[in-house]
Image 1 (cartoon, protein in one colour):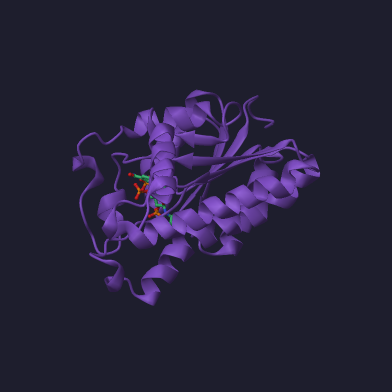
Image 2: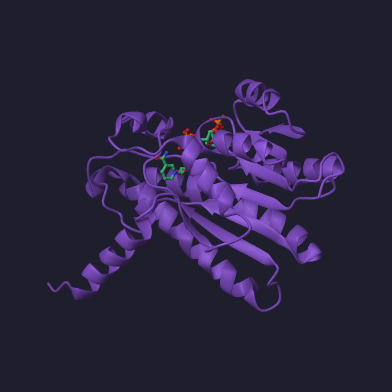
Length: 254
Ligand SMILES: NC(=O)c1ccc[n+]([C@@H]2O[C@H](COP(=O)([O-])OP(=O)(O)OC[C@H]3O[C@@H](n4cnc5c(N)ncnc54)[C@H](OP(=O)(O)O)[C@@H]3O)[C@@H](O)[C@H]2O)c1
């Protein structure tokens, strides 16, 4: 906990826009102290200035492990430690078919969605282990469970790899570190810049019918940080969809 406030200290990556910024606003309203990282320094600083909570802004790139080490150092120096670490930064891609995916595309998807979160996990885990507690959150996607958006195939694969790392970590920690909670967040379509920022362009997520508001997604993520299921689906009905999908696979024959 922080000296400046009684709330938890929460690190959020990719906090300059979208889900990360909305989560920062939501948690600021709940009394958290925040440590925020993204590449667009001005945008991040402007957003942070509106939060009304103790906040440390650390401009940086999550694909560089050293930048995340700096985040931890700044969090410890300012607030004495980290209670929650959210690996939220990520990026999509639009390619018309599997054959159109280049090796570089796949590498970039893994770099931005999987390796970046691995860096975050590896940086904060020794800190959490020393304290025997902490909440680690990886923001994945429904597409990791049901990869039914053809243009996003490389992205879905990278997020599925993130799920696998997350679930392996849970198994690894279960016996000796039961106080470390590992949360996987699985949003459906959320109205952010995600579609516009995708490599290869594509549909603006905000124009997709039924896109979830970023405020609602952030509220549900915040509600799931400390209690409830470790897989957090941001939309009602998503878990049932996943179970139905898996059941269909189990029953399908060639
Ligand atoms: N929106 C959706 O429909 C949706 C659905 C499922 C899952 N998700 C996941 O939710 C997470 C957030 O996405 P979003 O919808 O909020 O997207 P967004 O609006 O495009 O925001 C992405 C955020 O990540 C940051 N970021 C990207 N690459 C970064 C890097 N290398 N280093 C540091 N920061 C980086 C961006 O900041 P800078 O550009 O300033 O660095 C920005 O703050 C992602 O992991 C995404 O895959 C989104």
